[in-house]
Length: 335
Image 1 (cartoon, rainbow, N blue to C red):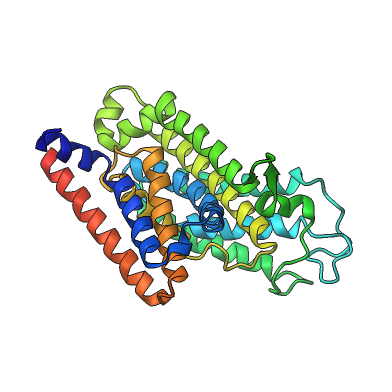
Image 2 (image 1 turned 60 degrees about the vertical axis):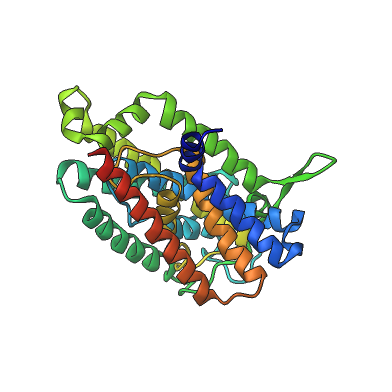
């Protein structure tokens, strides 16, 4: 293989090479890291974040930025958990609440996430407010709504617990295949990732999304309804945050109004590290998944070898800076 081909291969697959090198380095330091338990834990922790990042990346691809993702995760986690408690739980969120079918809290939480996305999309599309500022506003409002809901009588801001097994099974249950078990949360993330790959690559919405991110004015001239497309993207992103919130509540068996704190930054960082351009118009689903896995491996792996959380933040920050620097250089080269 010639030097130019090697260079091209390294450039096109850099994110996957980094992931392999990271796993190898941690495994050399601590061979016990290479185990099915570690692999399973990394996938379980990554699954909700992959779904959240796929939604956040859609907005990044349109050259926007969504700061509300984490707070939508928190709101939908609280809503779904509050409607999924055991009927005989001693500290119910709702007194004498009916035992709702499991699917109903899930649908309600996803709808709540989609509604927040709709608000953000309308502000961006019709008020023409910069997405960073628009979603900063919806982030603050969402946290306020979540905190008011969480503080209602008789809960009074107490952590929500006692969730029904039919609900928590989505976060902690597994499918037994005989020779191995696959967590439901991983299956859900894989199915949604496949659906989003189709949306990104095989639908008119996906093509319009990349067109808007590449050149919004050219998209308008070519006949794309930019406002409607942006609203649809923000709604889908909000629904994905809702799914992420549901899975976080199911995985941990409870929720508080602080769930999802800073998840928006993790989602943006994972997307950028995974190859989504901050200037818009570029991004792939496999790259986004790899970006999430890299940060999960950092969190899990460095904790596994005994490295403190503050060092982990420094390493994550360096990775983000390098990824953005590389993206900016690519953008300048294209110009």
